[in-house]
Amino acid sequence: MTVPGTFRAAVESKDLAAITGTLDPAIEFHSPVMVKPYEGLDSVTELIRVLLEVFEDFHYTDELVGSTTAGRPSRFGLPPAQALIFNARVMGKHVQGLDLIRFNDAGLVTGLTVMVRPLPAAMTLARLVGRRMERHESA
Image (tube, rainbow, N blue to C red):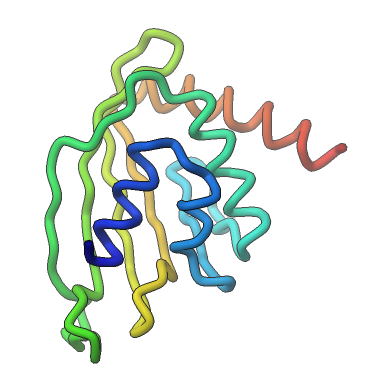
């Protein structure tokens, strides 16, 4: 299984330890509702933990593999970029989203940008995740 396949399988199985094992220590996670990215393994792992809790019936529907704008292939032949399209529910509201994933030469995820729609579901997701992240940060 390729490293991108490993990331997808870990997310689909909701295995936080396996997901974390695919992440570069200096990962950046760009949220659809935050201006600044979450940076570093600890904060991104906590955010993913919360997302695993709030998403219901999460599943990927499509996978697109390509290269970044620089067009540099990895020395291992892995795609430097991947897009995974997903469907889920948040508090009963349908969510469609996209995970844009960037990899380093070692095959670890260095960047994860998430986009979601429609707006009412995105707002519900933002409220739920925001509350849970605030609780974690204040603990």
